[in-house]
Length: 303
Picture 1 (spheres, rainbow, N blue to C red):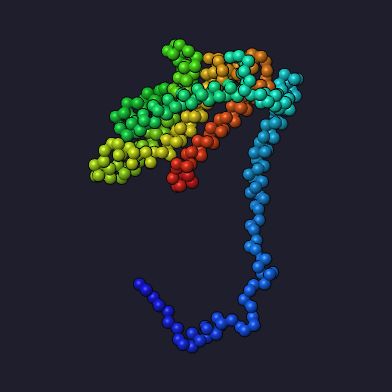
Picture 2: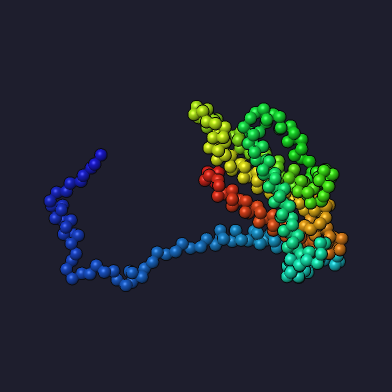
């Protein structure tokens, strides 16, 4: 519908006389007016300090407790400043190599990450398709749910002797332990995501007579992706926890072996440094996967 507004001639004359500039007047804005800018929004200092102060207070409390423990130990436990000096020395050359059992912290971290990548990659290749199948078919869900409930709570260290017996080597045994412990979060989260797909979607797929491949790629995968990425994030955290314990028992090159070797040398400062390195690497892995999950997640799920 088109609407029009009509004015009387008198209104038109009045409007024209108002809109006509007065003779001798200038429409150019004054310099003072041109220099006027929109004021910027003030910084919310209360919100800023609430974001900054609590983490600083937490780290300050940690350092204070650490210092008190060091003072009570009578020199047996390194103080924060002493540990800091040792950390500067350790990270001044993190990639030195004086033989298979004497390598820098950088090589140990890279070796651990390589094992985590192999074990986690194999778990993803098996766990994600298994989760889709278990969530999609009720028979498979009833078949595997008791097995998953039975095996999931088993400690990672209980799987390590099985790996040593079957694979006859420390490195494959560590990868096997990572695999068997990180596969469960991916299976469970993926299966739960498939089971929570709205039934209307599946009814439409039946009406359109879609193939199983079309259902998987066009309906299930986009809907299950947030659940699947959550399982992947949990699995990576589990894998990084498992590798440290596995390397303490299997030996070789790795951050877990480095911790155990420093304990045998009674170098407590290096053990504390290794604890911080393990935490920082785990935090980086967690942050990276959160960013990836956010990039592939719908807006309503992000919030």
